[in-house]
Amino acid sequence: LLQAGTQEVLLSDSIRMADKLKAAGVEVKLEVWPGMIHAFTGGFDDWFFESRLATQHVVKFIQQHLRA
Image 1 (cartoon, rainbow, N blue to C red):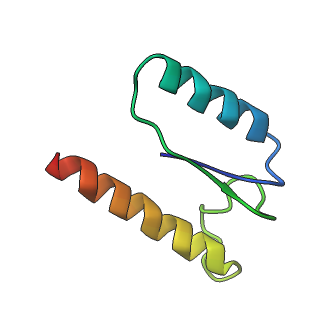
Image 2 (cartoon, helix red, strand yellow):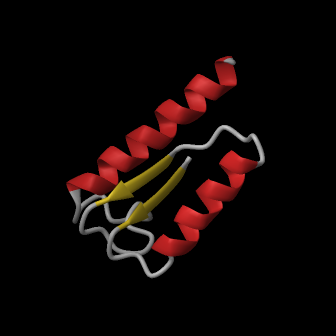
């Protein structure tokens, strides 16, 4: 799971990484969050609803893959 905001300085890197992982046969999910900044999930829960929601996506992704 890769998460990046549209205001993320490394957005293009995240897109390239997702493309390369897919090409290598790795299951990958890229989420691009509108208006979000670099590391928006890291400690911004009080500022951005999206931060809390993105963290929930991480938890769900991990839980799904631990069961696989």
